[in-house]
Image (cartoon, helix red, strand yellow):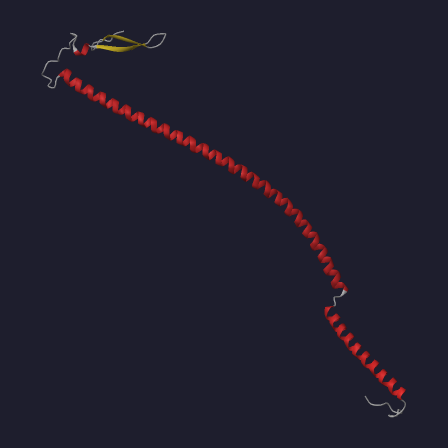
Length: 188
């Protein structure tokens, strides 16, 4: 820095010293002003106006209120969901029980149907056996050839007049009765 006019270069030492100190103070103040300007520029960049701040603050309050409402709705829906899940669990258990009962009943019905089918087959077999026996006995009674006379039984009765069992109805119930019955002549 240049020496001010009117000051001598080799003058008093206290004036030069004061001048140097004053110059240092001015330089430090200029540096401080420069730093403050930089801070102000940064503040301007990061600055939000009062209106903007109030709008954002209002929006935040509204969002908090909406969040609280949503939280309440969520709690209600969660309660409904838990209730529905409980019902589903109960119904699933009931359905499983009914399924097991149905499978058991179905297996019982199938087994009874199989038994009845087996009985029916046995009866058919038995009836067929009796038919074959009756056909063969009728062939023996009438003879293999129709021109042959019918054989006489050992009891002395004609084969068509053999003893037979009859069911006779009475007021006390049906009874079996043994008697002779001939063709064309029913017995009472």
